[in-house]
Image 1 (cartoon, rainbow, N blue to C red):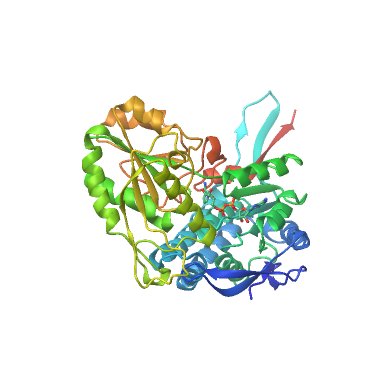
Image 2: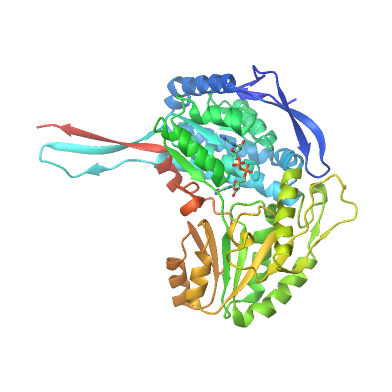
Length: 477
Ligand code: NAD
């Protein structure tokens, strides 16, 4: 049984209701969570406020940095244990789960170092005045986390908020809580003040909604779907609570004829099959200049056909999807492609010994997907790549910008002028030229435009979102 973690203690929900924890690799229940309610959010907010006033909020920036560095080291020591939790909870192949634990340690390391580098400015003003700006924490921050990368999203969101001096109430996805409960325990073990990191589990429409509405929450960081992002904005608007929204994507990989196809192929594949395509920044659209369209699809098709899908513990190219309803949803997208006469270039293989009760989807490469079809417009959140051809730069830009999203784009060309023209003309929060997300990007500001959200997490930029600016004007005669 997993309990909430409030005021540095495992805490049973007052509701006494449970949620089953299912292993996506075999569809079997292996644990239980608290199905918390608004009363549990209340308790977590009280604890977080107490730490703001008497614990974390009283530490100097340097002390916060040292605590975060200790947590980073502790996470690194427990990386194998944390990875195993996400492997089981989320169906992540071993390599991916380990990479996520390593990324969490790195986020905490980055934000540990950033704590005492964040400062305001002095401003020229009237004669006899001194004016300065202070960067102050919001106070108690709420963090609503999705199931696809719990540790990474906790690292960038909670790491940044803590570095800026806030305390946190975290609502993980009902489908992926185990690693975050353990990280909060580790923080308590190394001496984080009680109430600094609180974890409350439960359903979004119950406890997530209660968190977003709570008058004691001073800032909300939401990572999830655009539709829930809309609800969060509406709820937060009622009390003018600031919000950072990290929503979905339909990110294009744009390949020109002069690109190095040997570099394109593995990167394009990884960008759509990593975490079984359940990645906000998945490169889910492939836009290819007409003259290399056929040769590239032929090579990509061969590589897709060789991809193997199976249980997380087998550590193959692709693991299961998170839950049965997600498998059904991806299946419906593929059925709609078949109905529209969209051709499949190739599919990977689910290995024979994968349990039939697991949620396995073979990676699929589709070709000539019409720009208005939902496979070219909507987030599938599965390992499905939609390819289409373009004839020139203008058409590439038009196709790239033809969705409601704008999170990440990849541009592949050796032409220096085109690299910069494309980077300017494509509407998205990040543009990668001749790479795609290389190095993980802990240091690089991340976030969207349009329906991909607003505000930035990752990098130093995140600290501006997790603080509010106070201007202090002193008249000294
Ligand atoms: P989701 O929106 O269904 O859920 C996200 C979180 O919101 C969960 O914790 C859920 O319990 C909670 N929630 C649901 N309804 C709520 C409500 N009414 N009020 C408050 N909270 C509520 O998303 P998901 O299915 O968990 O994750 C997949 C989505 O997340 C995709 O759209 C993906 O692109 C997006 N995502 C974005 C980023 C990014 O950084 N841009 C990163 C990861 C995932």
